Image 1 (spheres, one colour):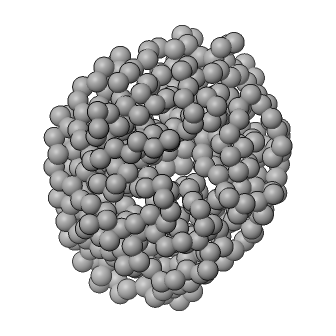
Image 2 (cartoon, rainbow, N blue to C red):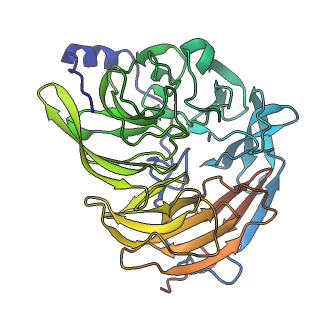
Amino acid sequence: MRATRSMQPLVVAVVAATFAAASVPPARSADWPGWRGPNRDAVSAETGLLQEWPAGGPPLLFKAAGIGAGLSSVAVVGDRIYTMGDKGGSQYVFALAKADGKILWNAKVGAPWEDEYAGPRGTPTVDGDLLYAIGTEGDLVCLETATGKERWRKSLPRDFGGAMSTMWKFSESPLVDGDLLVFTPGARDAALVAVNKKTGALVWKAGIPDLGPRGKDGAGYSGIVISNGAGVKQYVQLLGKGLVGIRASDGKFLWGYNRIANDVANIPTPVVRGNYVFASTGYQTGAALVELSAQGQAVMAKEVYFLPASTFQNHHGGVVLVGDHIYAGHGHNKGFPISIDFMTGKVAWGGDIRNAGTGSAAVLYADNRLYYRYQNGVVVLVEATPAGYREKGSFNIPDVSHPSWPHLVVADGRLYVREQDNLYVYDVRGAAGGARGR
């Protein structure tokens, strides 16, 4: 764990004055503008949803096809859906009509990645009339949402010396924060980078010291989240060498936590609340809660607890914090449902529960329900309660090709399920506005 001194307040003022206020319209409550939703926490604000599913799952509204090979999730904003895919020898961003899934436009990002796991992993980030996406070769593009016209682009490897910690290429969904676009090249002198979202002009590069012996240099497969822990606005990210906190105003390194890193792939997006950061990785590593505190002009990260892999590890699929409990899939490539007390690390239930799903599980929360999407294409609805595991329905995604990994989205009463070239859209509100049986 490391810390650095804060810059003088003048620096904050200068950086803040560099940009004009954004003029984009605010997102609607029904929108899902990017990775893990509006707050990057896999929590949907939707209410009135089906609390139990009929046999076979919720009704299918439509199937969209032609979006290429890919493991990307979707963004849903206004009357459009956005995602990424490999098709015809290139990697693209696709825009679809929300009404029926018709492809409205596609825009080239870069070269495809045609390996056994097929296609891009990142999700476009939508911000008013612009969107941002990162391809597997590290191509970062800014596109107009109306037409797909390219405004600007960067290359994480060529422009910032970026590299991944291991072999599975770039998988990030960039973060929009005010007038900044923030992303993770993973270089030692540019671990995180902030640019002007309108022009791509460099604002700052965040260098990091050696965090410790675990893991490997380079970017991980996680997403940046915003924390105000210890009274300092900062970007928290999971790198190849572990967790870091980077001051939002100027890119100064604040703290690092190496124990959570492994040598293969650090994937789940961290969860932040107040002064706390929760993170987990697979490959027999475990999970940890760290507490951020101010010590003079420094920010320190102190380990509250560490859970061994036998107690909890999340390979990928992520975790979600609901109330005072973490919910997730436990086990390396297993996804056994589990509930853990956020502050103590005590397991409330699970860790060895079997259902129809196998392999890693992506998890999402909406309206007192957890949506688990498993690698074998099974989607399971579970009550979000620390009192016990209570399954409320399940269904099989059609035409699954292993591995079935893209994260689910619930927005405007619909469940969006990406499955390679296809997107399935289900009605999870129901004609009566959501059956409330429990």
